Image 1: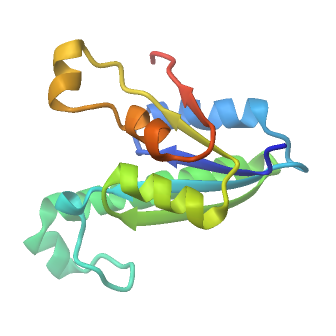
Image 2 (image 1 turned 90 degrees about the vertical axis):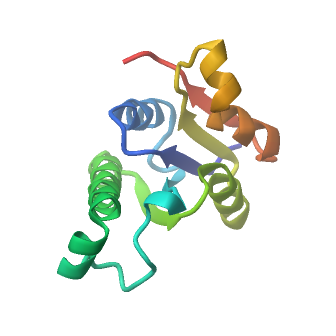
Length: 150
């Protein structure tokens, strides 16, 4: 029986659909939900106390914007699930999404990972392989992929 569920989001509009899928298939009294959002290190601010300083906004405008979007996405995801009665925690990390998802699933002892899927052409997949496919190969637990088109 699944009890610990890791939900990997990326802050895109598809994240809302993933949360709806989880809300439909999970039960408030049976499942502990953990939301993970991994910000690629190329777009991450230097490690600090979790606040974006005016200096960061000036020196790293793209990373500052990415951090703000990630913070807001995490807050919205956790709030959405808690409002539906789920025991939910969130974790925002800087790092490769595949490695971060697999490591977090192992750290939590996750019984299930729920994540989205980008619909790429074959050519696009050659240059930018699917994150969900890589997670499936490395996870060590079942992975539910929400592949709905938006």
